[in-house]
Length: 135
Length: 244
Ligand SMILES: Nc1ncnc2c1ncn2[C@@H]1O[C@H](COP(=O)(O)OP(=O)(O)O)[C@@H](O)[C@H]1O
Ligand SMILES: [Mg+2]
Ligand SMILES: [Zn+2]
Image 1: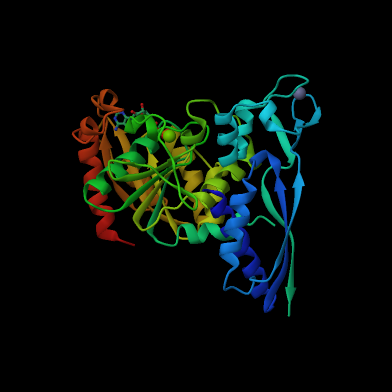
Image 2: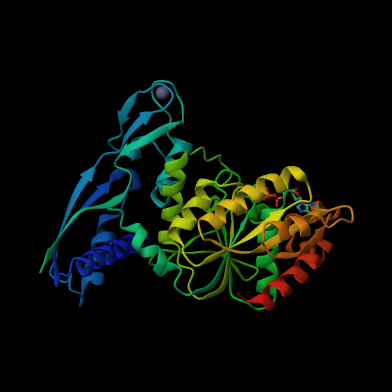
């Protein structure tokens, strides 16, 4: 379960921010989930729940916001988004992208010019949008 | 905020010594040296990891002769073990497909790997880098603070010319340089020793050109019997005696 490793990163970061800002409690963590990485939300939520236990983030409210992946072709400038990877890719391909989203370049091509040379401008993976701390 | 950055130092906190194998040039033997060191260290019962960070030209798996390996997922990814070496590479995910990614994405893939890989306790982690001042080299300097750089060059002016730039750059970044290995030596000379002296970097020793080496790529058993490995072993003994 590699969601655990990402959840660990989120909680550790929240606690570090809290310490740095001299807070005593983390009250809210706002997480953006880029859907290119196809995070298993049950596993991710479970890990977050376990990891905050007994820490100053124990009672934090954890909110999620989801982002569909948006790509921009470097070759022709075309911009496109993908709503669901399942319709486009096989299980093994989705799994490879799940571990390392940059591997999308192997499997996804620009729908306009067929180039694999694109930027992922949105919806890559997990990041923290904001954290609320109590003094 | 990228949560992955904070976890990287935790992932490497139980690794005693991190050695990044670098060079200005490609084709000078970085991957052979990295993989050879990992094999020698694990043979001597050191807990050793090998991280192939050359995303555009991963090679360590070819040298070790491994195909796609099953990954163990346990609160992250535990690198598969080959001959006692914990081995991590982009090929575990991409197999033999070309990974055409640019600067920022190279960083992103590298950060992801460092954030999810659980190395556990290691005596040594060897990192195989792409040539030059690559994104990968710049990133590990930014993300991993306690590593040392092992520089490989051939006794060619072409190689030493670019290696000199790399050394200057590493020094300007206050990176820790273990020393220089001279590889693929075909004639007697001390030009690399002198080059090392001039650049105030330790000369660690030479590896002769080994015409049998190619036929052993892909077979660990065969590799361990090569002259290449014998030469590398002498260098390793010297490196250990320095132990920083
Ligand atoms: N001492 C040596 N004797 C003979 N061939 C060598 C020696 N060192 C490396 N090679 C060969 O040189 C080539 C490049 O080596 P490699 O490790 O892939 O270089 P790099 O990683 O620096 O690009 C490989 O074919 C390898 O087998
Ligand atoms: Mg190489
Ligand atoms: Zn295009």
